[in-house]
Image (cartoon, rainbow, N blue to C red; front, side, top):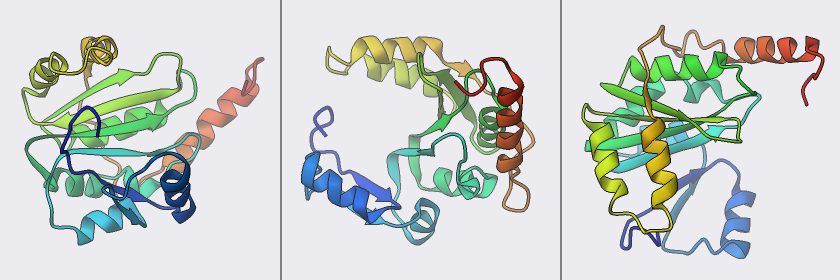
Amino acid sequence: RETYLGARVVGVELDAAVVRLARTHFGLGAEVEVHVGDARAFLESDSRRYDVIIVDAFRFPYVPFHLTTREFARSVAEHLVPGGVACFNVGRFREERGVVDAVGGTLASVFPRVLAADARNHSNTLFFAGEEGMAERLAARTERLPLSLRPLATRVVGELRAVASGEPLTDDRAPVELLTDAILLRALVRPEGLR
């Protein structure tokens, strides 16, 4: 809101208590439209289109499978304006990429262009999904950001890599729990374990 004055922000949060806490203790103003419920169900009932859609519901170890599928990615794509960008923040464990690669491949099966960057010192991968030319548009927008945000944005844009289409996760087949279980089992047999 501070970077893009006048931007209309719409949020969807599954937990009403989180919304109350955000409004009471973290300055989430009444001008931010927040819906309590499931993000996928919200999109299915919403006819608006957005410049940016951010999906940040992927807290490792287990992620909501219905937000990893081709059908959900199509719904997100249908809700973007031309030139819009969807950003998915997907958690991972160390360098284990089973879930991350499955989600990235699924996104790339829907969107013309998907780019990824791994967050440093965190166990997250950021996916940016949109039209061809998205990397160039992101780089150009970086120059218009406030000075305090430019170094981080410049670094992320510089680290973006293309994501290839893969066998998509679908509503009928999205074994993200099995992928996660395999990651956890491999971690448990390592000397350092889950630490």
